[in-house]
Image 1 (cartoon, rainbow, N blue to C red):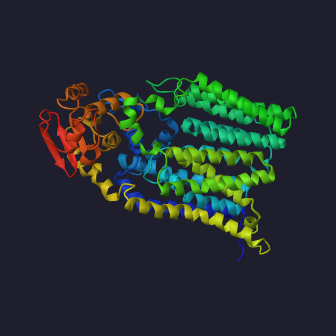
Image 2 (cartoon, rainbow, N blue to C red):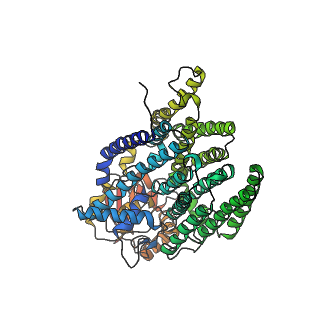
Length: 584
């Protein structure tokens, strides 16, 4: 029986499939969320910011971190503020504060996933077809990297920040590219909101702005780009006024709304207006593209020169001393290495790039070429930096689904007159979607068997909940622990920590690792313990057993992991693999 896939039916089907998938996620992870068993230290940090909120310091100060000094967070306000409002709504119905924070944060992540799928489906329905819009939802729910951040137990901004960008794509890639000042203004506004939520979105902002410029060049009737430029700058200026960099941060901070991003927005707005100028002068598309590419290179050079630290990137904040023992161990900053990751992360982006690249060549479509090339670039970024893979999924889903919608055998899939080879090719494209997830799951199993990844049993040995009852019985004090555990300790106890897994608390991280890597007679360690007023040192044997120093002597971390007696830390308690030393 042939199904008449109207736009509304496709969107309703997307809504239903996302409800089913997200509902299953709620059922499987509700217990973990209720017990605050979260996989990402950033989730705990977000909860601590909200739990310890004080009006006089705002949402970005963490008083119990970097003890005894406190620290300021770079996270912007939009995601935090939304979680805060949702948690107040839950408390109104009698939910206690901690549970309200957990469910507000997890619920916002799932709501973001639902809206993201709908926005992507709208984009594909606008420029592709309704049935391809349905396929886009299947691609999204089959994405390993996106659902890594899109789970109930992820209370972070990584999916939330993609929403305004997907909304901007809806307004820019509208049906038949009809002129609309309001939609272009909203598209630019949402691009600016994306930057405000997280500057990590900058490459995607460039991609969607470039696609809109390409449409303007080839379809002059799509309307002027000045409303988009105005909306972009309005959002960035509003963000700066409401949410300027917190104390201890540079006014040119790269990881917060700042002068760096006001300058970026201004230069991008100039490029959009330059596109209008090319159209107004009736320049040919090849000449206009050459002018715009040259202008893009020039403004990129200007931005990199003018913005302090832009050339150094994120690693510019990290001293060499920390790069080996801490920064290089953060998994989401690492490249993909396992066969399961190569398949689960890159199959759809590569197929989508090839497919839409062919369609762009066939139809001489500049905006499709921009999208296909950008997807390839994002595939490289996602492969080299796991944190970029969620954004890679957003753009590759659009690329794959739009490309599929342009194939004759897909549009007329129930027409037997279509050549068999074209039908088989479309079938292979569609089958690549379940292959992406089922194949990666199978390969992940073999990776675990081969010891390439840590087993569930090994992970459970060092869960903080095992030693949590002991921590809660102790008088509040300052705990030295692995930075990955710092945020969880802050949320689940009333203790302070020296450092969590946070790149701006450089002094806390340096002191933590200098202390733990010290060797007998531990002169530096004892000095730091006195300076930082450390009351407890907590370690799981498995975590600290490999933390070596510069010489051949055992480090303090290794002696603690082995449970050795330390004369200046006379009191020790053991719970499973955990060791707790008390500074009396």
